Image (cartoon, rainbow, N blue to C red; front, side):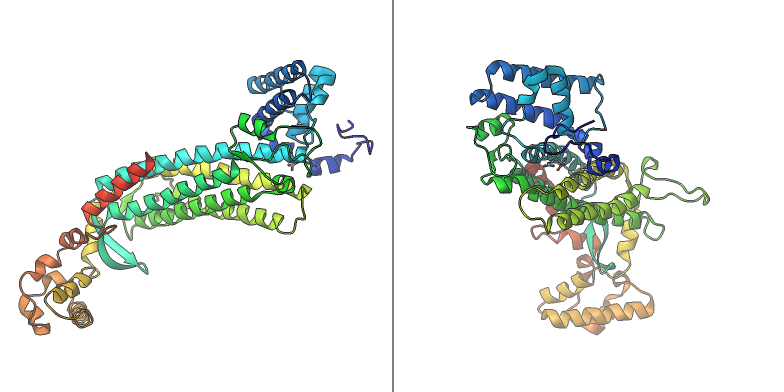
Length: 457
Ligand code: ARG
């Protein structure tokens, strides 16, 4: 069949070229945005006297019917069409005759597709933001339960200082808060309307771009028509925000996987979020966390692909830009799958307090507190640090821990040691004393939880 744009050519493209050129396979998901955008366009054309009100009403009625028919399944999207824009216009013209042909006045597919993508993605941002809020809620709830559950905090994956599990969890809540912030920032620049930029240069019709933008819920219009049709920054920004979000989920996944191993046994994931092995009967694998970690790679890939596609493009629209959609749709789909699974996995995981405590009792993670004890008794920190290190070395050589050395043994290193040192190196005291803002003390964790809850309101 000849294309709607037949004229200059007969529009009889080779069928392989058709398949290659077509985007309906992936842009059909924007049917609703395309139709809603067209309704606003028809209304604007009438409001500006470019078409009559009766014609606009006919167009809008026809578009409403198409939308309803697609949603009820009465009208299936014809995959042999070039893209969703051509499909909708074709059906409209088939149904309404000549009036249908008026819809595309003062518009091009270049501004139309830019409009549709912005409208589609702003909804995706809203959905993903809600899912992130749910995850933060699940994390905060767990943190509340474990604001005095002691475990080792690590640096270099070596036991470093005692912390509470709630504190560790809340670190992820903070990252996710920033992810929310990044998404809402991205949404601001996304919510600018390109419609009315037309092919590239604007139009000779006396259109009202702001009328159309307002009707579609945009906060403003793009102020340069070349930029309006060729700007895909908002896609890159979204992919970048999603990549950072996935990076956070991936780090969290890595810890979940480690903590679930026999070597750690800090947590046990619910059966609902683990899998078995087809051969090894003893296995309980953290596949969900591994998949989230794995899928992070594909979201990064989507970002890289888009940036690479855009980097050499002259202004304004080039067909290369059709390649923007599959990647960003894939990234949104991936993130939307990961988040609810992750939330379920977190809220149902069991925490093994005893194993966390046992790990905290090994590794001399209270050695800093021992040094701080001497500092409080008047020794300069560097000297206190050295003495504590020597005491740790003695413990290692003799298979002891700081808690089991006698006071006499301590006094061999410094006369400043008194019996109150044992209270100072008690793990619970160690965390309770870390009251600096943002520290690991249970009271600080409570403050963090309050902060996050307020932010989410
Ligand atoms: N399917 C195209 C895309 O996704 C729509 C815009 C086509 N415009 C054009 N002049 N060929 O980018």
